[in-house]
Amino acid sequence: MTSRVLRSPSSIRAWTILSLSLAKSTNLGHSSSLSNVAEHIRLLWLTMHVSMNFKFYARGHPSISSIHPTTLELTRDTGLSKNGDCIIAVGCSVGLIDLPEPVKNALSSGACRARLTLKIDVHQFAVEGRGAQGLTLSHPTDIVIRKSGFISDRTLMVHADRAAADIPRSFVELLQDPRRKVLVELVAEI
Image (tube, rainbow, N blue to C red; front, top):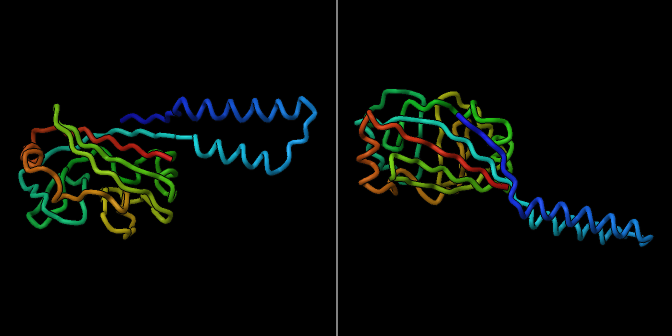
């Protein structure tokens, strides 16, 4: 498991521009009006970009059908019945409760965009969605991505662009092999 917080060059540049412009207006004896400061902060906000990356592993399972039209799920559980048509990977090394706090904080913001990418060898599948206020990210075993806005302790992201049924069948075949190790990469951006 790894996690890291990256700041894009544009956000560093924005902080530098803001601090230099505020220092310049103050040092030259100009009175920085509240509206000028507010404009500097607005410009900074528009250019700032923070990205958090967290990786973990899961495995395939022969019973993965990946046919659910509105959700997809990864679980720490190692078994899977035929009824679990949204489950796309088992044996996860983490549950939602195990995510790093900075990632949880980002995801529980309405401004967060999130992407979960599954990688098997050279093949990959990605789903994008949003964080939301009210996400608790507290479930010990399940990680659920939803096309809807429904929130529970199992929800990682909402308003996703894809669900289990949208995974290409060739990728599902790879997910049905229990020997396959799946690298899962979660990126949360604010």
